[in-house]
Image 1 (cartoon, rainbow, N blue to C red):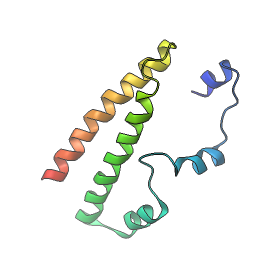
Image 2 (cartoon, rainbow, N blue to C red):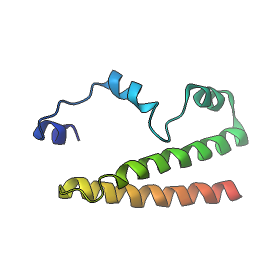
Image 3 (cartoon, rainbow, N blue to C red):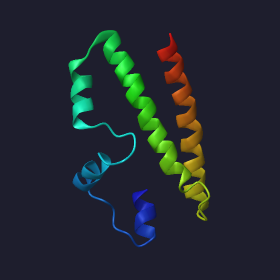
Image 4 (tube, helix red, strand yellow):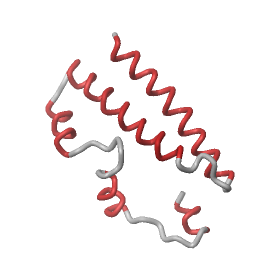
Length: 99
């Protein structure tokens, strides 16, 4: 993706900026949620992790939907792949939570 940005005349986002931006995106865990996850273990950890991953994947799907019809075929293909893969993983995580 960095190459795409460079080819389109944009500069790549540095890691510090990317980490700061991440907390505002849909599906990114808050500091409190990360602390809750760190403090949990066993089945509680597993359920929290699955629940948070579902939200994370849903956020990825929403972002990918914004560019799935891109005029750039590489971007469109990547978006469609993300949507399909993340949807399948959400179904697996939901099945785990139903056990």
